[in-house]
Length: 94
Image (cartoon, rainbow, N blue to C red; front, side, top):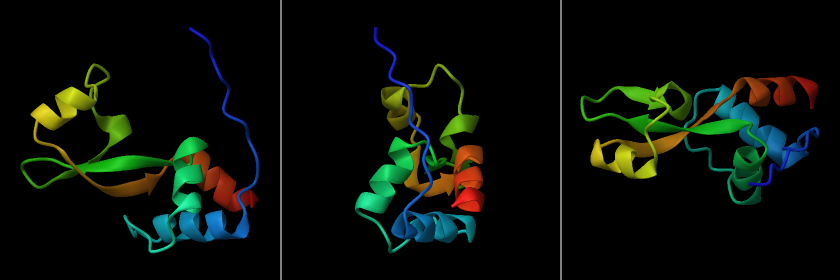
């Protein structure tokens, strides 16, 4: 399997606005499209799930063995995105 490193660069103004909206607590910022795609591509944000009991949990907090099929079978629903540590650093740097 080939390993492709994630490049590191400062966010564009539109991407920075998207990251700032996530930092403000908006799970689904109205600024989306390419900015949202790049956020996920560069690891600046991660998906947030709503559990069957109503709690919210980011993808990084789920057990490592849960793949996308296990997530669906468990009844978790994707509700938005949150910043990662890498995203907070990109927002501060940009």
